[in-house]
Length: 249
Length: 179
Image 1 (cartoon, chains in turn green, cyan):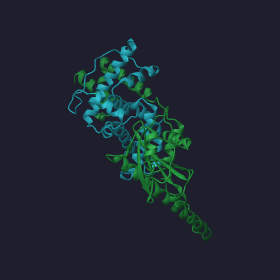
Image 2: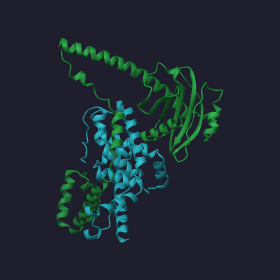
Image 3: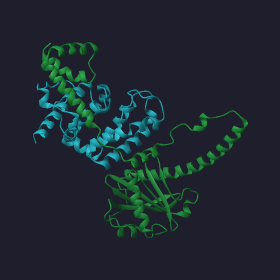
Image 4: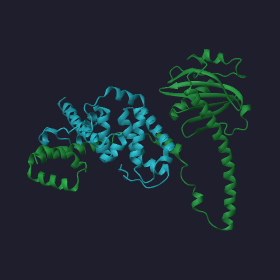
């Protein structure tokens, strides 16, 4: 076989993709051909150099922690593995179960609320007319809600921040009207919902940072109003927007 | 960082996915050239993978599955769309013959580990399709079959693209060495 044909097989050889027979034949050729051996050495050196250079970027530990937190809880519950068939253990488990049931009920309520908000957020993004008042000016958007919802609120100044106000519209949760504001940060759109606290009394978790499977959610209460920030932006952006809204009061 | 096993054992999503985190992030930043975009890309990859974990077949190559999700997510991002719009891979087809290399002495194209910075700069200058296939093969040590699955291209195209990517890298390294 001509050197050119062997040359074509060199990369596959160093990538471990040649058959055992081809690899043996190539090794035999390399032993007797200094030109192909030099070519092979150069390719191997390049391969090793790229392997060494490939490791360049390291994630921020805080970012890793955020991802870990967002996917945690997917393991089987430890108590299932350590079940002991004794009355004493059964009694303890009964108490634990009762506690978990209560916790699950609360979580279900919380998850149901987040699901509804996520649905509202997705419906807005998917809509051809996502907002009823289109303006980047908070002094235009806020007055638009006067007479449409039974409360008022303040919006933050966004200069020197990465956020842009897109607009707003009236939204409903638990059959009660509230405000939905859309903000943009880079390619992400974030919905901010504001409702009266009295309309959401049966909803737990007055101040929290909750993550649904696909969205980041922030929530807090201020002056009788309950705020929800929901979107697929990263946690830092969500926290920044939350701080801006909280500072506006 | 060691390369995780090719065939993944069964386990929870967290147990399978978190050992890949550092490498996925490294790959994401190689693709995007931007820390924030890389974080967004990795975050979206984990969200999508978690959602789709039920459809993942336990015991098959979880690593290739995760890289494929990340790479597809990148392609629909702004940077990914830009790279797709600006890069044309001439005759990057399955039936291409591999490009014969120009014979040189080892000294003339010597790439030592000490040249790491030079190689990193050259890698960064490669078009995304070349950069990703080289990283998957050389750094991630994926088989041609797994690269084919990750990039959704035929095996023949993996080989011809790798061959072109290696030659392009060598050309850029030479150019950098001259300058």
